[in-house]
Amino acid sequence: MDEIRTIQGDTVDRVCFRYYGYTAGVTEDVLAANPGLCELGPILPTGTVIRMPAVAAQPTKSTVQLWE
Image (cartoon, rainbow, N blue to C red; front, side, top):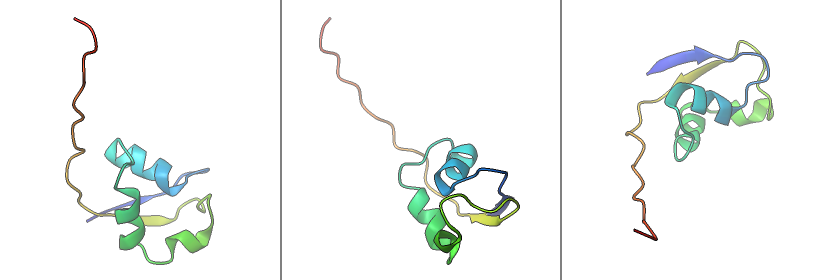
């Protein structure tokens, strides 16, 4: 499990997007791996160490073409 430090103005979802490239489904995993993280407030203190759990790759979305 990797660890990263927050920078000024970071939120949990911003950290997730910066690390994983997406937030869908991983924000909950990060919060579960870091008990008490949500108690720090919406804007995390600069330098907070966050453990980033390994997650499955983002599921691909199928596209529907309406016109040919």
